[in-house]
Length: 210
Image (cartoon, rainbow, N blue to C red; front, side, top):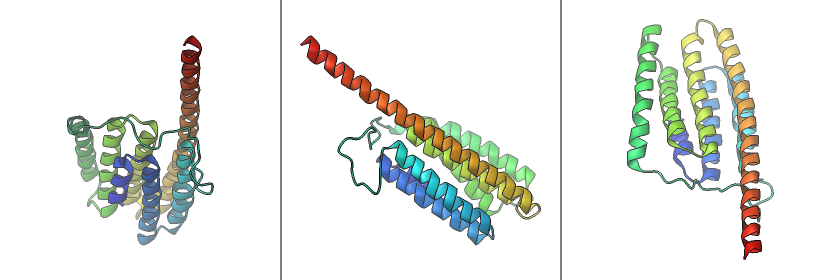
């Protein structure tokens, strides 16, 4: 699960990154299933893998059933270069937040289980990617992975004592994440269309001036 999240956040080919995210959501569903939360597993497959994945591909103007379009509204590769120095500088604040969350978790729980540890790692990866990347779609991926990390920690803390409350919190969070992803995908498509229109207008003005 953590490896798939890292692949989704670090792959510079955006269509492939969204594919990694869908695989990550499936792995999260399998995790819920393995710990006995069957309803959360089904909801994760529906809301996390199917619907969220569809919105992410929609943001890239990808129609999996129609093949590769001749004209694309959105670049399929992140054009912003990354350097190791920038990555290290962005990593340090994420590690500091992760350390504070870890200390708070240790103080709240008698023991730290695999759900809490995985959730902390996902939150750290997501925070790092969110401040590292400038592409809006990659930040949207980071937003979803941070949310998954929070859900894992919540269920690790309250799942055994109050499973109904934990399920309610996670289901609410999944719906909020889905609506946020839908809004973000629509805004990305709209901004991309405006950029294409501006580029065409500028090219037309240059040809007219010549």
